[in-house]
Image 1: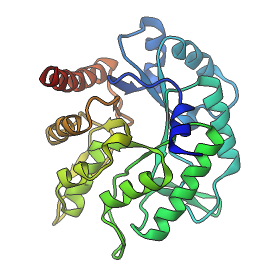
Image 2: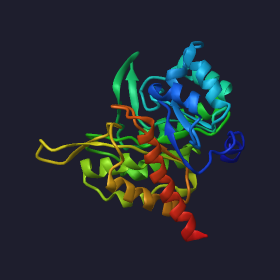
Image 3: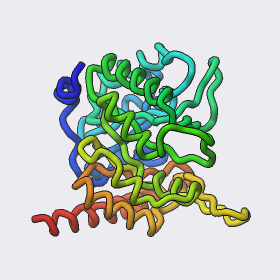
Image 4: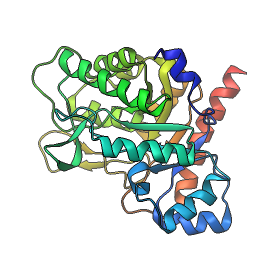
Length: 290
C-alpha cells in the first residue's frame, strides 16, 4: 500500500487545536456539561471490552467530539509477533468509533505473553528499524488507514547503535510511511536524561509527517548525582516544554495538540487551562503567519 493510499483512507483530519485526554473522573461531567473542547483522546485498551457503561458514554461523546485512539499495549518492537487478538480488537474499535487519529508507541512492552508495566526502549539499530517498519506496515494494512507512532521517554539506552534517537524515529516513519505523534515532553525529558539538545531532535523530524503533538508534565528527581526526569503525566506542563512546543509549532505549523494527565488527575478546569495555553501558542503562530 502506498503512502498516498494510506493517507487517502484515513478519517477526516483532526482540527489543529488543543484537546485533552479523557479520563474516567471527567466522563460524567463531559456528558453533563459538554465543555468547549475541540477533541478528546482515549486509551484504546480501555475500550477493548465489547460492552459496558464506558462504551455507552463514549458513543454519546463521539457524537459531539472528534476522537483520537491512543494505544499502549501493541508492543510494536517486541521479538514476538504482533498479538493478533489485540490487533483485531483495535480494528473493531476503529470501525466502531471512526477516530480521526490512531496511534501507538515506538517501543516494546511484552514478550512471551508477559507484559511490562512500562514502555521499554529499543536499540537504535538497522535491525530495529526494519522490524518496526514491517510491523507498522502490517498495522496500517490491517486498519486500512494511516497509523501514528510516538517517540517515548527513556531512562537508559543501549550502548551501541546505528542511529541517533531522532534519526531512528525519522527513519522508521520514512520507511513505514506512517504518521508521527511527536511527544514534545518526551523529547525534553530525554534531552535532560541523556544530555543532548532537544532542538536538534525536533528539527530532525519529518515535518510533513507530524499529525499530532503530546504535552505533559514530568517529575524531577533531585536525589541523584545526575539530572533525572520521569515522564509521570502528573502535573502541569513545564515552562521549558512550553518553550520547546512553541518552537515545534513554528517548525511544523499548527498541529492537533493533546494535554496528557494520567496520575493525580486534577479537576477538569486545570486541563482546560493547560489546553488554553496551547491554544495561545497556536494562535500566536497563526497571527505571525497571517
